[in-house]
Image (cartoon, rainbow, N blue to C red; front, side, top):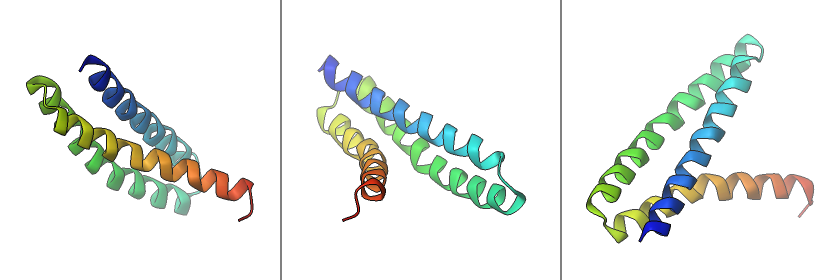
Length: 92
């Protein structure tokens, strides 16, 4: 059970770090890019906050199903970003 908790929190932290990097890069862009980037970052912050609540509740009550749901939800943006980068490198 402890490895499940650790895996869920690591994925959450990777999502949070990715969002922070995106927001920092968007803030250093031109005015239009800054507005669009910060808007997207704010929209992504809402599901990330929901994921933090789900992880907190699942960790507190030690529910496996909640942790698995959190792992799947946290892995989706990372898999999508990885797939997008791979698609750009290798023309499919």
